[in-house]
Image (cartoon, rainbow, N blue to C red; front, side, top):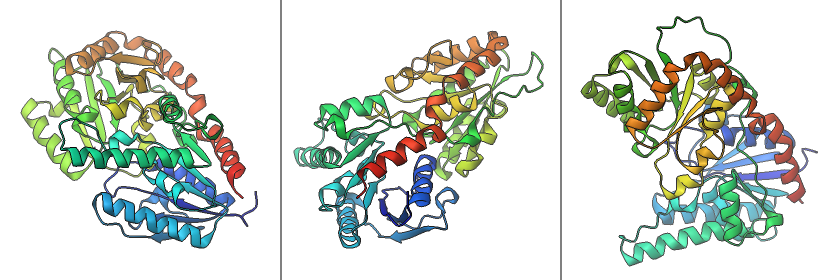
Length: 379
């Protein structure tokens, strides 16, 4: 593909979000094959988003829904002016841009369900319900009007088709995990039978992502003897403070380490000595569509996944094969940890099964599909 072709990428990043790797893979790939412009609502200083051959444009956005709509309008105006060969809308929230760019071909990366952006509880006031409904409609309609929409998982794909997206314009492409993760957890770590399990959790440390479930489960699992140590990576300053207080209250300081946010490229280092990775979603509507990045990173690294029982986990985790599935509560997680401890002689075999189940999620396999799909849309 010649770099004489041009591409504009529209992002809708949040300044406080912890993960950028799946976006980074796509930006890097597009920058290699197109003259690339990346639009964001704030300066992108994250190491994984810095590429010398990319033209970065910042369009400052006001907070709230009107600020979001205004930002998308300005992005679309810039695209209409530049007339690139293709525009890549790098988030579900950017999908409405497809409605505003005229004849410029668009590809939408569909990575988040509209109900996460605009929940639909019946308890909110009628006007707020109507406004949120409009936001969801705009996102789905933008996806349907894109020349191609790329859902990141099976649940998203089926949902888009149910909302009117044409099958020939819908192509499921997993987020992808880069080569630096491959098999990092497979090396045998010298350890005695008495050494505790080493568990790792990578990602946002929110309540609805199992924060309190994890902390309480570690307390329960270690009540009789120290069988597990958990390392949490990715807490914001506020989340660090919360965890510090909770750890003190629960009396689990010796069983847990909580670290702040780290560059995405350093995440494999925390998996090298781990025995299993934790993946928890509260059973909320949007989490039934969004498979988490860390689940695939764990598998590619060769880590069995301890996953809460929700379809965006069970779609990829076979209980007792490449991980274990538990109900979303601290007692259930503690029981799984104890089970893994009593069967720790099988951990290496499970690691191999985790790694062997992950080939479909490797970015080096996915990247040619992604580029071919974008190039098939580009003018």
